[in-house]
Image (cartoon, rainbow, N blue to C red; front, side, top):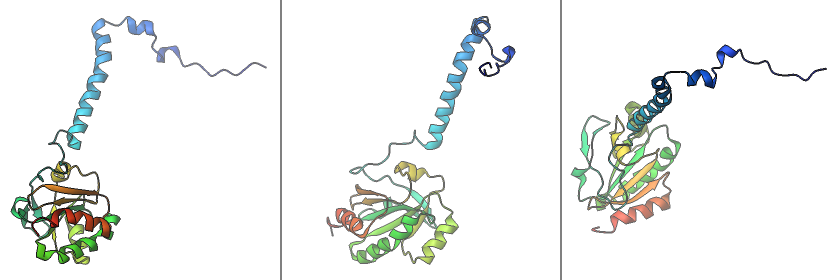
Length: 199
């Protein structure tokens, strides 16, 4: 009984090193460079789509990048017009469970610190405006919902996924940044960074 050996592929389907070596030099060079150029082009295209060549993302201590976005009810808001007031910028979506859970906390904070001039704005992240508007109405949100249709503001702020929240002082500087869901204690601590001065 002889040992089993796998069938060999037909010779004509497996080019030999000798056959490749016999190709003209320009063809050999093309065979090496073409895949590299295609991969570089693909990588560049993906980087542009991902916004990697946009301005660098904002950090704590930086002036908050201004934006002008449409509201869910058809108006318009710029961050610049809120200068002199403490601002909470919350990136959220109606499909995001942690966003649902932190929503009441943001509403309570807005009401509790109305006398301090606190402003809460919610920037809708990868969600349908109609779904976001319905969600805000159902949950009694009294702050402004903004639409970021091409995601440019989210990219500028370096958002990876909702919820993410920025706390901007009266001076327009980013004082704090919460990645992920806010708990009541988180929110109290973060708010302290923007409410104490000038309150």
